[in-house]
Image (tube, rainbow, N blue to C red):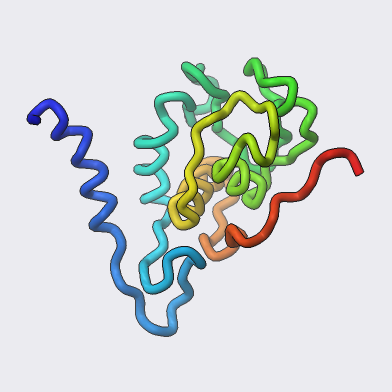
Length: 158
């Protein structure tokens, strides 16, 4: 049991981050009454869920996925990483909305993409996108990430 304790610490710490908001405070659509994670929480979530495959320091090689330094605002599949043909052909620009939709369901937004890991929780996705936007020099409040009820744009060529 002791060897699993370090892996449980981040999960337990994340559970303690949700605190009640004042009645007039805006909340993320999927977590009414709970504080939405911020970019600092996004950094912790990124380390926990994404850092084993993605680096965020400019120029640093990643083990499994592309480096995400400066990802917000750039075209999908445009760095020197070996992307799937599907992602290269997607024509996506990594806006906050597209990143959120991609992280929620990579195969749904870009069928045939190599990425199989997803993050379904809206507030956690918004926090990760906030963190990535901060790395890109374009921090935007969490409330600007669209709710999961919006459908991803169809990029099938019409």
